Image 1 (cartoon, protein in one colour):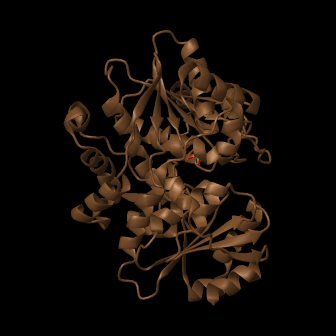
Image 2 (cartoon, rainbow, N blue to C red):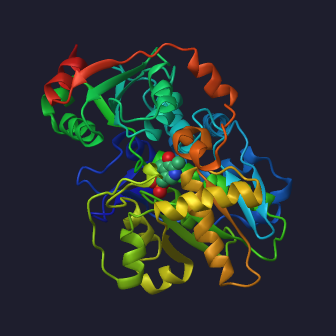
Image 3 (cartoon, helix red, strand yellow):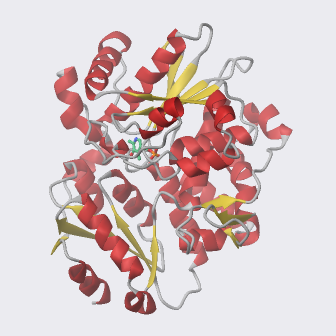
Length: 431
Ligand SMILES: *Cc1c(COP(=O)(O)O)cnc(C)c1O
């Protein structure tokens, strides 16, 4: 399989090059040359297959000959080494829980897959590759955990001091070994700006082999298809495929679901649930793509002004917005509605949701109210404990800590504080 840049169709790179580069030189996102059709036997026999076999068959066409079968099978096995349960919430709604990985959010899947691919691709390199990433919270932990102890890879994470939750900070700063956390005395935008400057700095590029672990990387995007198939395996009413609701920020997760659908996954409909950052709901309603500065909300991992993966969704539908609208709706949910949803899920359905999952549940609930007979699931994208400061006052209860968080609390934070100026980052990288 080859990949082209959405900015300049016509030149192609393979999966290895697309993974190492992250973004095309013309700043476009990479997109697969063809979308594979999955073999019938995969879908017909899905009940009898292991999750590893399903994931392997889904990703195989995308990696082509850049990864030998035994390596790809190992990478897939390690990527999905935790549970993906579809849990009953109400008679017509289930929750696909994607928070059972090491950093308690769905980003573990993409980060674990990408880190292992990159580790394999750079195994013979003379100089180590440096992965540079800015995080507002969730991405950094998933990337740090994914790359931990991967040989030949050094990871440098920039995060805004005092602006990530305490659990998130511990996930970033307690690993050590090949992971360094830089605590930037500034905002997330400062961190992102400093990373951008590093990638534009040619003297730095000559001395270091720099790459990013940005969510637009194909090696993070494509494996997110896996759990839509795991959900289908657990879906009992195969004659009535699910409406799937995805809490969305950059739209990478839902874009993977739509790609799976294009390859043959049975689905009834997709819903993108956003918070107050409603560029896409507005676009689908008015046809106008109008970005605005990001608004801060309770579901902060979705506070995205300009969802970068939406161009890939348009490409899947060959830029035909009417046919896109038949398969995808988008709904914006306010913070007040999110709070009410967390409370209602807890009190009426005995289900503890995080703010992102709650946004998804409410958008799905509303859709099903208008579509008799339909059933569906929403993606619960993070464990509620990651957002305990929001959730606990709403449900007026403490959330029990999972074992992985309990063990974090005993660990020592190691970070290097730097002022929010690029020279400080550059000096550190070259030291
Ligand atoms: C990143 C994130 C999202 C948004 O996912 P996108 O792929 O950017 O749409 C939703 N929920 C949580 C908890 C996240 O960390």
